[in-house]
Length: 189
Image 1: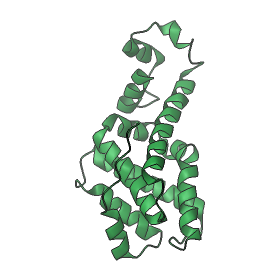
Image 2 (image 1 turned 180 degrees about the vertical axis):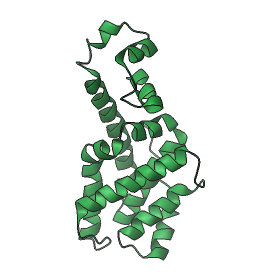
Image 3 (image 1 turned 90 degrees about the vertical axis):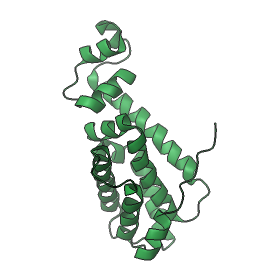
Image 4 (image 1 turned 60 degrees about the horizontal axis):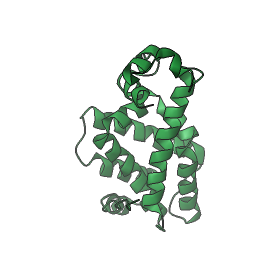
């Protein structure tokens, strides 16, 4: 899995051959098939592992928060900071064409949950929640790429979170204030 994650992040799924994965993992080619039926199965396993781990981390960071705007801000900022501190994860997200897979899989249900909580609380406004989730997810991927390419400022996570909150109808000054709050620190364990 580690070898596949590294290769996929560097060269993309289509350009990666099973032989390259087994060579990088220092295992025999045939042993790959003891664990995976084909390359698609390891791709799905990498995506599932990657998204569940990070989505759970965001759930932990936002547990107990009452303001949906703060939850959305923390989630977006967390993923952008993660791309900055773990470029393999960031490039993997981009290379796997994660926009659809992440949104449709592990992250979309959580993002939709948070969006609908904000709508119900009167914090967010949207005519189409699914389109809104796709738009904010696309913005997250675009910002992730910009961070990985080094074309944005150090505090890009704050600017991005502010823009997403404004897209959801949070007033500009309040969106700026929320996006500049300190991120929670994960608890040990």
